Image 1 (cartoon, rainbow, N blue to C red):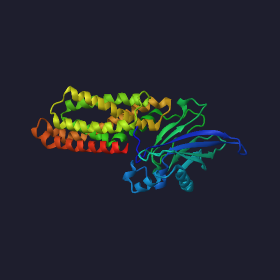
Image 2 (cartoon, rainbow, N blue to C red):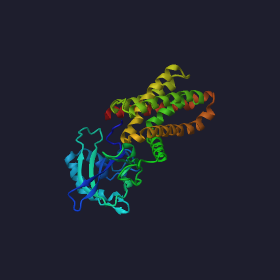
Image 3 (tube, rainbow, N blue to C red):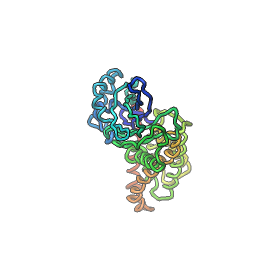
Image 4 (cartoon, helix red, strand yellow):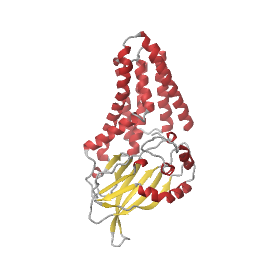
Length: 368
């Protein structure tokens, strides 16, 4: 999926419980391994508000931290551990858990154009009453994918959730059978798919608007959108289930090319033809692989995977409708067969979309 140094992606936390025989009296420990961006935290970015470090006032601080060696970054984090600890919230029943630092491993990735992942391990002693566990963190650290890990519990019974910034998990049983309710899974992943289009999916928004400005009338628009939807749904499923695995170094520039293509076609051709429909289907396959990158960040348990996949796709379609409906009400209703529409609205809008697509292509090639 997309992987850029300036992109803020959801953190992933794996929760497990292990016996601790060195503690007297013997007790269980809650272990949490969190994969996140150390640079984001140290720079003081608010990941609940920004999705790209270039959009934040602390962007330069983030870049400076990204240039540090893993050892230097680990040292800075260890000094700031007390501040990070205050951002963590853990409960076992009504008891507040006291987290301890275990280790931090920073990925040794010298390519500055790519993000760098850190894996933080923390632990806390658990009370002996077998009470359920809850976990969350400060909203400024952004969304969190929380996954329960166990070698003895049925994977379908394990808890997995996408937590909004600042949210606490539902109570998690130590013995399984606390998988998220179906309605909650659907709601979470419909929202995730929707947000991936509006407001985060600027490239997908441009592509859909490119299809719209080719022909604002509903019949040719429906033909294009239907093909695009079918195509990206196919590759979303195939890529999310591991049957397709293409690196973002190829996919992201090609998505930018798809935006440029539909814009040029809007200017060159007046009528919908089979060749354009075929190309739209092909570009839809590319966009589906891009969509799948979001689900690959989350990594759901097997028992919830299909449900989350379908829900995410529903969210994507709703996002597309939210883009198209205002465009249709603003331009499609008044356009009809008016001769002035193509010259005064469709072509100028297509030039702007094409320019944005070209700029995306150049910046993505240079970044890769």
